Length: 97
Ligand code: HEC
Image (tube, rainbow, N blue to C red; front, side, top):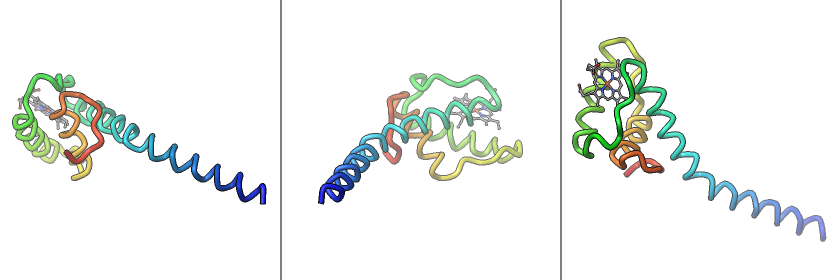
């Protein structure tokens, strides 16, 4: 009886924990991806330096450059996360804007 109650409380706690940290982890993920993938060929650009539409164009150009230089291309998910991060001017971003 007592045991089942404790297990239920623990499960709920874990659920809340994962619900709260999910978006945070995704945000860190986007920043980290940007910082690791975009520094391979030049200094990191300032997320505030361009607007949403320009970032989209730049990212497509970079994708092409990565392909040409034999770097691993960004996956669709990585592309979206980095775009979301840059278009949001470096604000935390949970991906898929
Ligand atoms: C395969 C190498 C490579 C990678 C990886 C790369 N870039 Fe570039 N990037 C270039 C080259 C080459 C230029 C043009 C010359 C320069 O500025 O060094 C450039 C220039 C830029 C510019 C200046 C505008 C322009 O088009 O000239 C921005 C902004 C930029 N990159 C953003 C990014 C972002 C964001 C990422 C990560 C998604 C990234 N780059 C990853 C090669 C790369």
